[in-house]
Image (cartoon, rainbow, N blue to C red; front, side, top):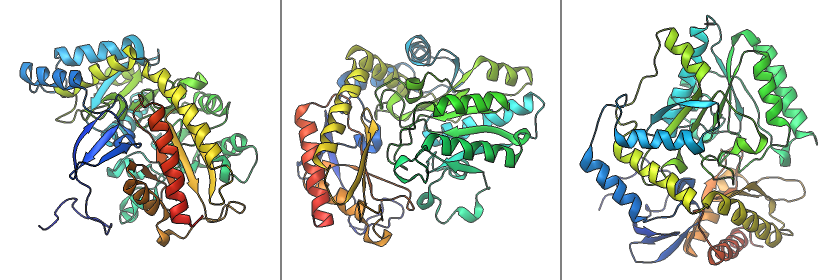
Length: 434
């Protein structure tokens, strides 16, 4: 049979075929069990095959298969009430729903530009982003992404946006990584002219592009202060790191900082449905309303069945204390990985928070020299692990590479933790010849 999926692929291996999934496990066409240590694309949080989520989606489809997104349905109302009652930061009281993180980032950027126009600051059109980063696959989201490989073939057509370094302690030229990155941000704001900067867009903890980069304490408080000083909106992308993935409800919560507009998805639907939210303050929404502006919807945004799935996923996360479990299990998993790989000549660092963990592989641990890109080390490691029955997520941007990401469902146990550690060590040894 001719392979027509995906549309175009650069991989030499045939596409993986998964027949079913249950709990933390996938089952391929031969019935082989594969531990989903990646949570798919780091999206699965309550585990696969939860019947109560499927039942909620079925009931929603029967009750209301579709309604245009601005209208209210019982499923939309319940989800919004749950978000506001116990999940969102207190200042984020307005909700706009999309079907994907890329759509959410596009909407977030449009809101920022509309807000400043509504306030009479139409010259504020620049979004300062960071590298490495990834904010989505649409043209607008790629334009603000510091991700070389996903921009490949499109760079010539993307609008130029200013960027600054994300805190990357392992490779920072200054021991004071927070100070170094903040100085770079201040310099960039002034080089661009603060009167032209609409927003600073960043992942509070950088996801797969950088490999779970956690900034030092004080960094985010200082960024928030810079935004306030220059009438710049703080725009945060928690598509991957939000909804409990890093052991707190949102990654930025650990620093006691709130953004002006936030996008967060993946874990909102737990892998069961395509849904993402864009969340903003009253001040931002009121400015748009008073200027007669709105936030346009996508056709399948806030789909009733997706809202029902998300509402049930959040209920399960609360009921089973899975965010707390992610924090505890993640701490154990990271510590065991760090111990197992402490003296490995080709592992530079194990890092992350909660169940968002990155392992950076290098050719030389002392110099931090990377393998050549054409050696495809990340792909070979994840392929070796898959043959051993564990699925990991390949991270990096092309320039930043050989990063293996771990982001399993929050309810994994001791058996899964042990298997993740054992398999990753074996796969790294296999590929690096250690």
